[in-house]
Amino acid sequence: MVRESLAERYSRLSRESTGRTAIDAALRTLDLALATLFLALSLPLAVPIALAILVTSGPPLFYRGERVGRGGRIFTMLKFRTLRRGAEARLGPYLGPELVARTRAETTRIGAWLRATQLDELPQLLNILRGDMSFVGPRPIRPRFFEELAAELPGYWQRLVVRPGLTGFAQVRKGYETSMAEKLAHDLEYIADRSLRLYLRTLGATALRVLGQFLRGFVRPRGGS
Image (spheres, rainbow, N blue to C red):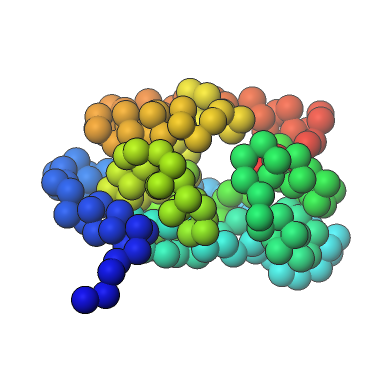
């Protein structure tokens, strides 16, 4: 008998966990409606951004990164490219605050503005339409870090019960500099209590935060994770 890896075991546990079918179906319907609306509204902004990236730093236009999705399925997450070509390979071994610091040095000029305004994440609307992601959920993580964190943090596998999110409870409450253990606590709280009200409340808090970052981005662009 072939022994399953830790990642495989956690993926299986997430699929076997008792689901909340009705609320998950409702949130998926809302995801589809909002993603379609926002994608249409963002096209007049997305096209100039795409042209600016290609003119200033050439192709590729998108960053494509493997992430762990619902039930342990691997998917390709999209972002507008904000880093110099080849940066992903150079940044690969790092995580957390060290990744944040090293990323700043790799960020292009327009990439710094995109990160400051969070417009680099517009292509993830396509991930939501495809069913890879939700608007609200734990932020997606690279496969190479999943097994490490799952072994270190009890309950980490439970993040796989829902789709990863464009935004999350942890980001709204604590931001990007928080420890993995603290982020997990907030993620698990959202997973356990997820509802239309909590989904909309998290989206509203995110919208206010992004609006503030967008306005500050015109004044002082900066890098980020």
